[in-house]
Image (cartoon, rainbow, N blue to C red; front, side, top):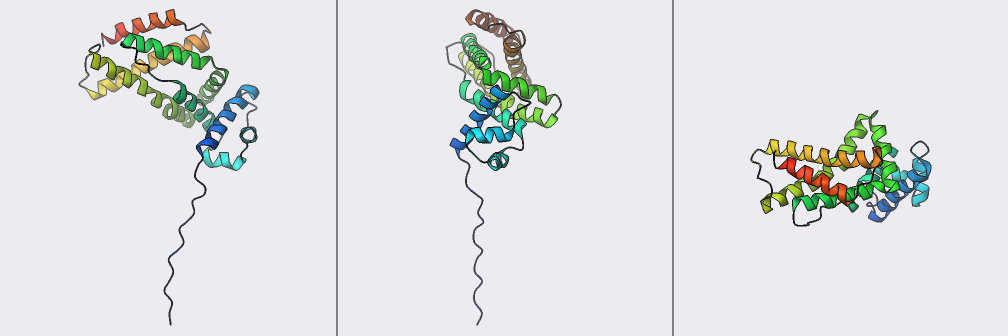
Length: 208
C-alpha cells in the first residue's frame, strides 16, 4: 500500500530584519567612525557597540564602505526636509540651513568625507553613494520645483528630459555650494548667506 507523498515543509528564510537593530547598527557606525576614524574602523567595532553579532552585519552589508554610506544616508533621510515657507526662495533658505546644520554634526562630517574620499578609488561605492544619498535627496528638488510651479513662481516644463537635467543641475548647485562652504572653506552658513544664495538661485531658475 503506497502512502501519499507529503508536501515539503516551507523553507525558512531566517529572522526578519529588525528596524531597531538596524538603527542601533547605524548609530554605532557613526559613533565609531567619529572616535576611531576611517582607517581604524572595523565591522567588529560596530558589532560590539551595537550589541549584535558580526555575522548580523555581514548579512546586511558586504563591508564597512556600504555600511558607512547607509549610516550617512539615514541621517539625510531623517534630518532633511523641504519646509513650506510660502515661496521658493524661502523654501530654499530653509533647506540650505538644514543641510548646513547637518554637515556641522561630527558624525555626518566624518562619515561623508570618508566615503567620498574612498569612492574616488571605488566605482561601486560611488554608485552606492549616488543611489543611497544623491538620488534619494533629489526628491527635495522635485518637490520644491513642483510647489513653485503650483504657486506660479516657475513655468511648467514640457520636456521630461530637460526637466530631469534641470533637476540634476539644481541639486548639484545647492549640494555643491553648501558642502564646499561648510566642509572645504570651513565658512559658516547662516541666515544671511542662505538668503543671498537662495535669491541668486531663484533668479537663475527663472532664466532657465
